[in-house]
Length: 335
Image (cartoon, rainbow, N blue to C red):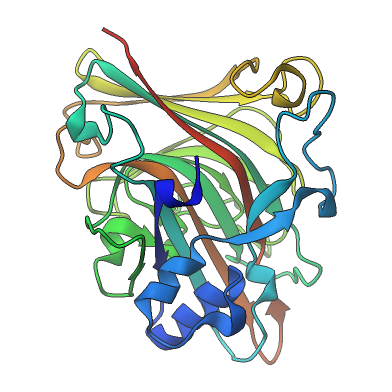
């Protein structure tokens, strides 16, 4: 899929909105962070920065058949300057636009006989100035039935207090809809690890988790399931997130494929990977987390990212960078 197959939304979570837009944009490759409350540049921040994949450790193999590519899309939170004394958060959502997802996208153009699948390579990078503060980190994940205000604009912003709790909340590390998250950030309590001194954040290993929340409420009543497997920093994971309807419920399935060797995209080609199921969740049709297929706003697929960093006089924790590459979106008639 190409750049203009998506719409881009930047989000902030702080009472200092101008500074948050600046952080959102600087961290994602916009020169000098853009300008103040400019919602257009906030959306442009969600495009991310082009990164040479070979510049990262443990790159995705491009041999034997050069099936993957040599670039990655990075959300570079570690590049935000240390110039104030409190936490800074930023993030955004990137959705498949209504003209690019096919005749059966978004979900209110389909019915519950269809299944959706999103696939991408995901990675979380450990910064050199990670520090040891708690509740600091970055999330990146895939989503279905996410909510965003419909607009013809390719780039837009979601300011704190402007419906952010219904769409994307960087401080809580989450977005709307059904999602699978490669997570290094406290996610509204779903993936909080116990321990001292850091329940979540720079001293934690990444988790791959499925999260659903009540419609239009990112802070209360959510449910999560941890996927099997062990996950690490500075490592690519090929993740697939499927959604389909069964018996009045929505079923969410998560799979991973090898990065190299037999069964990998590098060896077999995109579309011919060997997928292994690592997680599953059923969203009951009677629950407040269930999202109807004909919902007028909760109908989009794509990916999201959030990050929180802390720069203070006494301690510092740089943001963790997030990467995504080779996003795919597919629909299938399952009737």
